[in-house]
Length: 474
Picture 1 (tube, rainbow, N blue to C red):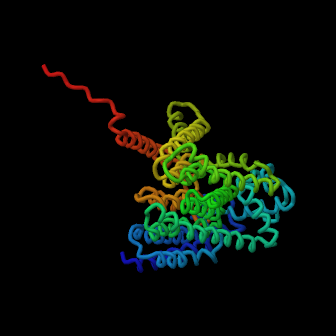
Picture 2: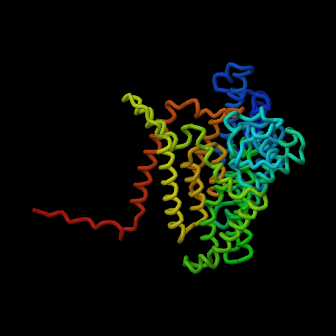
Picture 3: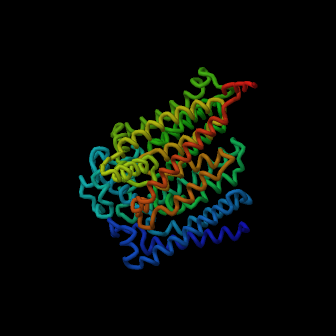
């Protein structure tokens, strides 16, 4: 397909998705307990779902078709801008999180600790815009974002103006990412235009980061900027400190950004890996990150309470999280034999254990080669093994992998499939397709596990393999 035709097909898809947002997006006074069936049977239900499905397909196809053959960086940036435009004027799309941000900002401005009490503790004037499940839960976001939310709500004075400012913050995050990704790509020998296309033309960006006004946008922007600063000038102490500070600010938005800090410390080393070199160069990155995170916590006056908020992801049960899908499948199999087993706590805990081991293993491998690429893998593992998966979470590894990886098919495919998981009003389809979704995801986990084991064995040096025993001849 000619690249100019892909540009306009993608724009058509973005316009259709904006129409879906106006018809049945995450509107302030929409149904807070929707299901796919009630949406279909509601006003304009078939039209909403049809427009959403066609728009998503067009935007996804336009992105996928050019993933390896975009003409230039300038062309990519212009195309991304065009695709973002319809999302700038649409109601919130695919999520009601922006309303939660607003009420958390009011709570913080009123002196309430959002890590100890949910937004229902203060009669937020917009409480009826937030899903019931999140009204009494602590905020899962970092202290810097809590302060930003308070400042936005205080400045805006209304729900509409608050949403506009949260979306402007998301645009700033995307712009920061657009500046940082080419620097990372050049450092890793990846064409900058291809990296930008994969990272920011991906429909997850216009639909969820901008349409949904998610704080992931500014977190990813700070993360990419921090990695770019570290990668551009390894060994320069002040720049390494600056890169660490940016990574720490990203973690002060969402603490999961800390996953990349140990890998950034490796990327900061000049010359071969040595413990002394790691302390000498990587110490500036780690020190900067911890300084920014602790400084934000002290400035907010909230301490490290945001850590407890991370547990709230377990409230949602959906097979899009592999550990959750395995737990669901175990429960279904137990029912066949007349038993009632809640395996979710065990499988989710096992997922966290596997993640911890995998992160250590990836860091160990990264000591001598491609630490930034391993940082992207670490983020991908973090998203995959967490108890909860939302499509916009995939933008975390997507940005880093797009700038560091030469094989793009697998993580691009995950992004493409994720597009179809959430309806315009934020209804997550995996919650309503447990069968056959959970068993199929469990089967995929088994296949991937077998493939990874075989790949690891095939990649072992010959000296590590047992010698083949001679066959006796009679």
